Length: 375
Image (cartoon, rainbow, N blue to C red; front, side, top):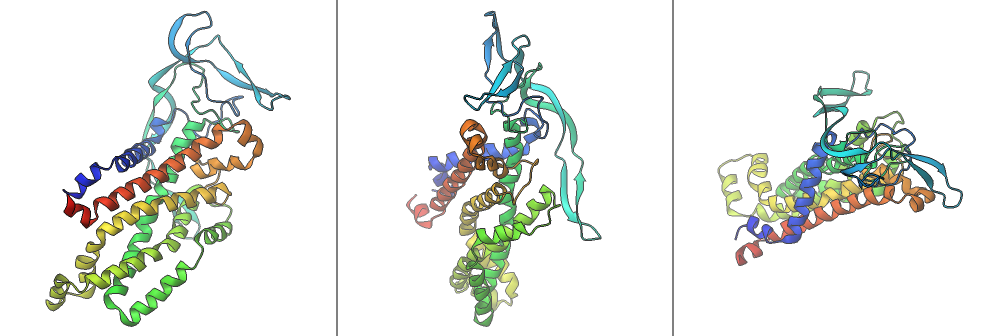
């Protein structure tokens, strides 16, 4: 039985893979999936609860799923909640593939240093202009499935757009950190001696640094004028700097064993260069562990971004990320009176981390040589 067949038999791993596939597809098509612009506030729409969907008019006529224009009134002195004003005279039908706010799909821009060493946004691809959304309303009423935040912005739209940062930071993080861990661990294990001693002492020093405190300390001294894209890049670099040492130590141990095998000895006898042997023959033998480790490491990057954004040192408002959307949890009144602002980003973070862990556990079992032999 192959590892793929073994993985397909693991229902929990399949669940994690399906959830992650859906999340990443939504993140890629965020402009299309999100019903509204995540930066635009609705008039008098602050802290609205999830919109109630109606099927009949107040007169009893069936017109299908629809909503009514809703605004927030003054705060009630008894309950502390805002009173809702619903205009039942203008039903707004809910439809698929509706015209809405204009956006540019697949627009690509990166923060790059200029000649004066200042960070600036460079547009690599302008994207395609469109205004089609997956769902929405055809009238004045807004369908706020998860309500609105304190700035009257649609919560679901901000969650969808925020998924791009929260989901991509893990992938970019391992792309930056894992090659460094692989190369350092491979060189250390292959050459041994003084090179091994120096590199492993460096690894041990990095492993003693408490990563979360380093993140907080470095994020706190970032220049205040940085954009969210620039902070995103710097957070990745910081988290990658402290996360590659553990991988290097494990890879070094595996390389110590692999370099004694016959195919490595044969390559050395044929005059192969050391770096070529490491990259071509030695490191590919660690692929199964690297895949598993990468799957299990991504959640740590996601949680690091969430923690930094939660305490105000990560992605800054108005740009959305799941972490800074959780920052409203620090307000006790919002936590009690408007729980939809808290549970939705918290649930997505928990579900994403859980899905990565389930998939990683499934890959570990599927790539275990003992399970393959039993199959």
